[in-house]
Image 1 (cartoon, rainbow over the protein chains, first blue to last red):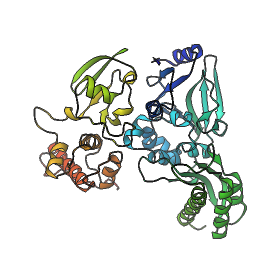
Image 2 (cartoon, chains in turn blue, yellow):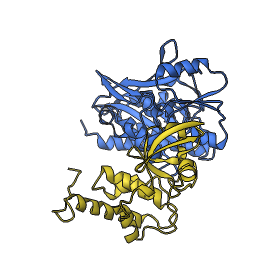
Image 3 (tube, each protein chain N blue to C red):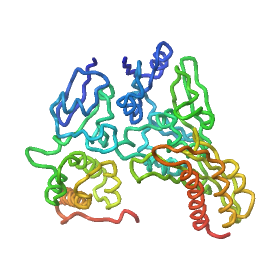
Image 4 (spheres, one colour):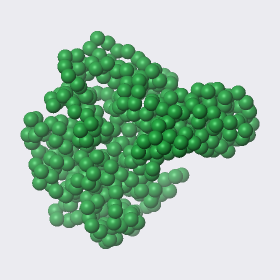
Length: 284
Length: 171
């Protein structure tokens, strides 16, 4: 295995453009190092990108820009993210452990392309854009077009993930992120659900829902979201929505859970979140 | 092989090593600092926790090629002039140690918390040690010990007010 430790982005894309054989980018290492130790990934070339200047959170007008090497703990604690994208801060705080969150990066969580990645459902409902770069230039991909399967994404082998951008949320946005794992710390999600929407005169509007760990990639639950906007926000609507969302999920059985349990829990997480939302919204 | 310079406790170190060797292996095998323990080797148990640039991390997942210029604090670096750190003292006094295997990592997670939060709640302590598994004591004494260390630290920082001031940070 050959290891490179470039210090600039130009140097990194140049190395990526030249290398033959398989190449892995090493950021926080919390997924990759484990896979290398287990022998499930055998890199011929390892590019350590930890020193690249991609550790930042910037506010630009109504946009937030997060550098790919920003740690999950930094995102969890960031004031601008808590203010303008609280769902992302909340999800970041539910990942791994302090020791893992200090190493793990948001770029790594996305590029690793796990269907259970906890920052991804929030980034779906934030309509995030992913900025990729190669030697020749940059391209921007909406997050829902970034994943092509479990552990697979659309990045070309000579590209690096630079940053994630999205519009700041409005104060009037309601949201919740629910994660079901074996325990609170260090548990990979069996099911996760991100909800964003508004409540106006007992109607839900602008609803967006994303589901983690119940399909080959994170998915939008669009049918459920449209249904929730169609009628009065009451218990009948919640019951029916939690039935529809189970049809939108296509979970598998694996070591963490069975498909049947996952499917039911998608409905349960939505029901619980919507009831809490309804209880917390003051009547008009 | 690469040459890497970094600081461990108070000493500058320069070692020649494989770039993919873990920080845990370097500490134990190259530097003889065996207070840092290997449990799972996959970041799940926290036995190998060290403080890297002020933050707790699992040393089993940090590679040599990522260490240049870093400051690492291990359990060996906590005592000063033969005097134990208040966290270490508190663990002994509260009986927060049984087999001792998780203790170095647990103490470093606690230390990292107390460096940024002088007056943690029990919930904040539980969060700070959520990545450290103990299979003997059941955490109660560990949490008590960390509260005791926090109190000792507050007292040391504010010698004129006994026990320091306790403010409700939720206000």
